[in-house]
Length: 240
Length: 193
Image 1 (tube, each protein chain N blue to C red):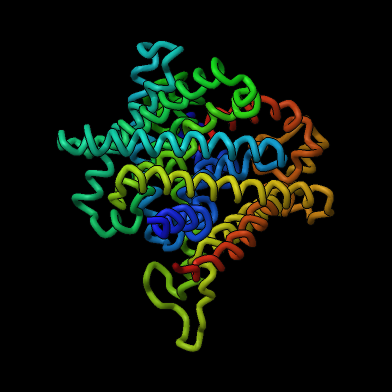
Image 2 (image 1 turned 45 degrees about the vertical axis):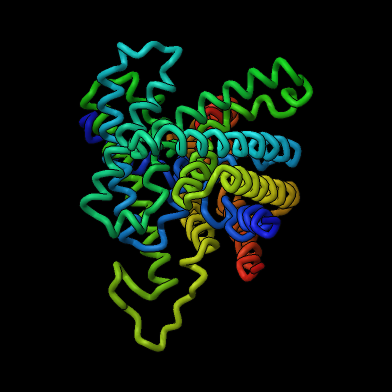
C-alpha cells in the first residue's frame, strides 16, 4: 500500500486516536452533544494537527532535543490562537457553541502525541498525511458520538427532526452522563467486534497490530505486558 | 462576602464539577484512578498547582495582558506560565519540604498538560473574576477534581474483583462508573444559596 494512503488508514481505523488510543477524551466527551459541534471541533483540531505536524517536521533538525516539549507547546499554542481568532470572526455560532474547548485544543494530547511520536522523526509530506489521518479519525469518532447523542437525547439528526411527535427524547444523553455512556458503548462495541479476531491473532502470534490502551484483552496479551511500562510512561507525560 | 466564598468553593467542587460536568482533566481522571493512594496524591498536587496557577494567571491577565491590549495572547502565555510554574513548584518543594515532595513529586510534571489547569485559568478570565474570586474558584474546582478521582478510584478497586463481561473490561466499565457518578452529581445542580 502507498505509504501516504497507509498513514490515512492508520489514523482513521488502525490507531483511531479516540476509540483505540483513548487520546483527547476531554473534547470528545464535552462537545459531542450535537453532531454539528462534533464536525466543527473535529475539523478545527484537524487543521491545527496538520499545521503543527508540518511545522514541527520542518523544524525537527533545528529544535534541540532538551527543549523540544516547550517548543512544541509554543508552536501548537500559536496555531490554536490563530484558529480561535478565525473561528470567532467567520463562524460565531460555532465559536459560542464550543466556547472554552477551542483554546483547550492546546492541551489535546493527540496533537503533542503526534508531534512527539511521529512528526519529529518523519518527512513533511508524511507528517502532514499523518495529521490529516489522525484528525479525520478524531472527527469521525466525535461526529458519530454527536449523531448518537443528538438522536437519542434531542430526537434530531443534524438539527432536523426525524422522529414522530410522540417520541419523548431521552434527555440524559445530551447531558454530561450521556457522554460517558455513549463513549463507553462505542469502546465496548469495538472490543466485542475485535475480541474474536484478536483471540485468533493472540494464538497465532505475540499480539495484534492494534493499540493496547483500550483493549479488553490486555490482561492476557503478551504485547500489552511488554508495552505496559512504556505505555504508562507515555500516558504520564502526555495526560491531557 | 462569606456567602460568596462558600458559593465559589461549593459551586466549583460540586455543582459544576470539573471532571463530571465540564469534562476537563479526563485523561488523568481515567489514567491515574487505578489506586486510591495515587489518586489522593494526584488530587493533592492538583489542588496545590491549580490554586497557585489561578492566582498567577489572574494577576498576569489583569496587570500585564489586559493593559497592553494583548489579551488574545492569553492561551500561549497561560500555558507557558503553567509549565514554568509547575517546574518552579517542583524545585521549591524538593528543597524545602522533601516529605511533601515525596508524596506529590512524581505527579507534578503530569499536571502541566492537565487541561483542568488551563481550563480554570481561562474560565476565570471569561467570568471576569477578580484576584480573590479566581483563587477561590480555582481551589473549589481542584477540590472537585480530587473528590471525583478519589471516589472513582475506590469504585475501581471494587470493580477489579468482579466478573465483568469481556467487551466491557478495561475502559468501558470505568466510563460507565463515571457516568453513574455524573448522574449522582447532577443532583447538586438544584443547590442554591
